[in-house]
Length: 208
Image (cartoon, rainbow, N blue to C red; front, top):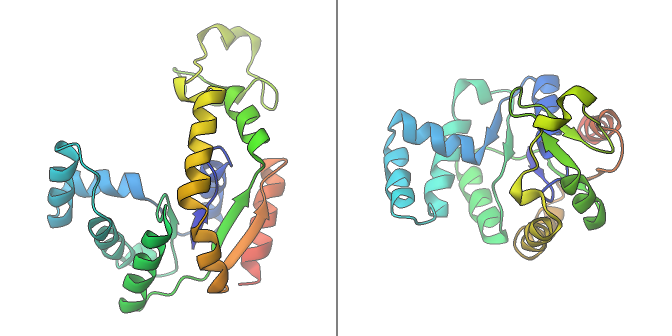
């Protein structure tokens, strides 16, 4: 399966819950790239060359890494891909590569959240540099004794969130009709309690 949604939709929270529920690996494109570079694989060395030159890693290199990763034993019972594809051409190229490798996607789960709520979520988000815990001033308030040390990320301003959201709508959202046409898109309301959202996702996946 692939997990899709705008920045701030709660993909990270839901991904950790879903991989535990279904006992499948969470394949983040960023983590996968870093691991391949660290391991010094052929594709990792190639990707490292692009990154050191300040260039984007070509889609075919990323897709090659994905194919290598999903061929590993821990993906025999399934996997969750996160962070790729980000554009329709990437979705089409990944689909062709997976089909050629004999791997079929069962579902693409889209977590839908209104833009106004994405901004509210990000602007109120604070992280604890000592524990790594993420709080929200409204939805998940921090204990009073640690408020002074919490950090507000520079990219969690209203302006930064608007830029990220606009980029999602212009570049990533076009993959939605592509997967709709294939009949594997599953839309999930991403508003509300994280437990409720997890239940909504598992409900649509149980029908797959």
